[in-house]
Image 1 (cartoon, rainbow, N blue to C red):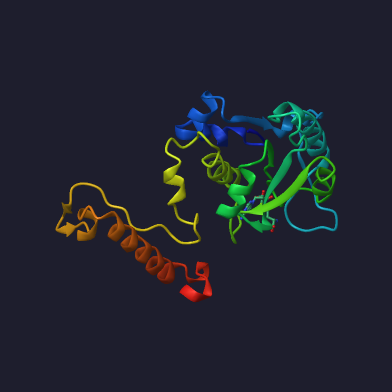
Image 2: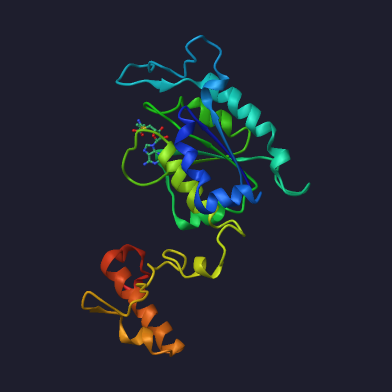
Length: 241
Ligand code: SAM
């Protein structure tokens, strides 16, 4: 998968060279390219923002650098596709507190795409016309990390790339570990324990030492339901609530 990121703070993304996503890039599974939006400015100050029409506090990101950057990145989309028959239009994601909420289902959906472009907003956000224009180049998604406001789209983009990236085949060594995780089956994950079996007077639940796989599986399912009921009842289907 190819992922392009547009940001005025590209060094935010240095952390994505570490750990599993770093290895995925070295192995050629993930082609992550972070670009400074200011590369597409032409004035001496490399300006990316201006005052809002209609007045109001803060600044708005100017459309011109975004238009040029998106033109260039979207035109290289064919190069990013795996087969000639595959899509040649990118999926363009703008992190936004006013977007659809990012979930595991969103991550799974986006992990099947050949080419993602993330556009990180700053200030009061991006001139609205950029989203309309981007729709002529690819599928546009405005995606929120949650119901709160961050200073910029970088942290949201990093979180999304990590959640999407670990679903790309080959990124996580043992694919089984993805199947049992929180949100994969609509429930939170069961509690996990490792050695020693007693630590600071706290014992691992007996059932996990029994060696009986059927009993362990049923205990884990109960724990998932109980934990989800207690912490996130909104996730439960009505029959289990
Ligand atoms: N004025 C905007 C509003 O009220 O919707 C908020 C702008 S915010 C200060 C600047 C940028 O941070 C946004 O353009 C977006 O890229 C990013 N951002 C802020 N909160 C976010 C969230 N919850 N999810 C995803 N991106 C977010």
